[in-house]
Image 1 (cartoon, rainbow, N blue to C red):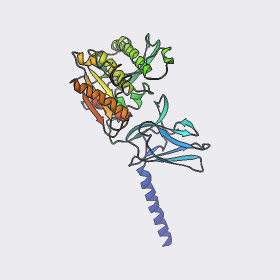
Image 2 (image 1 turned 90 degrees about the vertical axis):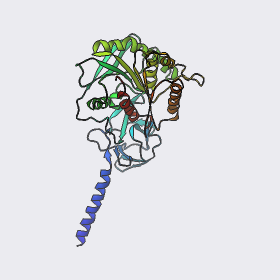
Image 3 (image 1 turned 135 degrees about the vertical axis):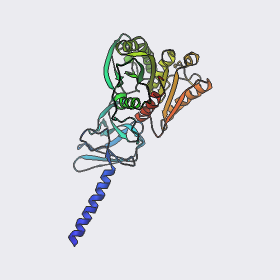
Image 4 (image 1 turned 180 degrees about the vertical axis):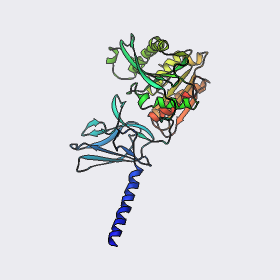
Length: 377
C-alpha cells in the first residue's frame, strides 16, 4: 500500500513537471536540435548557455530587450541558466556579456544586426501572416551590379513572385535599417512568406521586390565618421545609384512594367522618403516604416528631406507611414512631425500603428503587410 502511494506521488509529480515543461516552447530562432531559448505562454524566456570558465554572464539586447529583468544562475556543469520577465511580442536581437565581452548565444541562428551577426529570439504574437503556408511560392535570388558611383560591386536581393515570367510586373524597392544588410528583409522580415500569402489570398497585386544595400559611399567616403552627415551623404549617393544604375539594370534584366514604389524601415524610411520625394513622378507610392529624419532643425525639420516636392507634384504619390506603439520617443516625434506636416498641407496619407511592438521586425513585417495591399492598384 505504501509502495502504491509512492508510485502515485511520483506519477503526479512527473505529470506536473511535464505540464510545466510543455508550457515552455522552443523559440523558432533556435538552431535545429537545440532546446533553448524557450518561451512560455506568459512570454517569459529561458536561456541555457555553456560558459564553464566565465565568472559573470549578463543578458543584453536591443530594442524590446533593454527593460527585461532576468535571473541568472550557474550550475556545477558550467551551464548558465537565465530566466526573464515577460518579453514584448516580436523579434529581438540579444547577446550575452561574458566577462565583459559581447558573445552570441550558441543555441540560436544568427541574424545581421547592430553591424554584426547577432542572436535573435522570436516572441509569438499569435499572428501567422508571415508564416510559410501551403500556397504557391515565389523565390529570392541574389544579384549585383558594378557601380560607378560607389566605385565597387553592389549586392542586392530580388524577390520574384510565384507567377513571375507570365507578364510584366511593377517593382517595389525596399530598404533595411542601420546596422543591418540585404539579408534583413529575407531572414528577419519574412518578405517572401508575407507576399506569397497576400498574393494567394488575392489581397495584393503581384510585384517584384528589390532589396538593395542601404549604404552608398565610395572608398574615401567610407572613412568618414558614422554620424548623421555621413548618412545624408550616403542617401544622396544612393539616390544616384537607384536612378542611374539600379532601376535601369532591373528594368533591363527582369520583366518589369513602368510602375514603381519605394519603402524602407528606420534609416531606410528616410532613404525611401528622400528618393521618393525627389522623384514623385517616378514612384507611385512611398512607405515610411518607423520614420527617421536626419539633419533637421527646429525651424527646418525637413532641411535635408525634400518633402516639399510631394506637395508640388502633379502625381501625388501614395504616402504610407507606420510605427510601433512602444517605439522610443524620438521615433514618435519624427512620426508626429510628418503627420502634422502632411495634415497641415492637406496631403493625403495613411497612418498605421503596430500594437504592442517596439522598433523591431514585427513592426516592419506588419507595415509591409499593410503597405503591399495598398500599392499598384
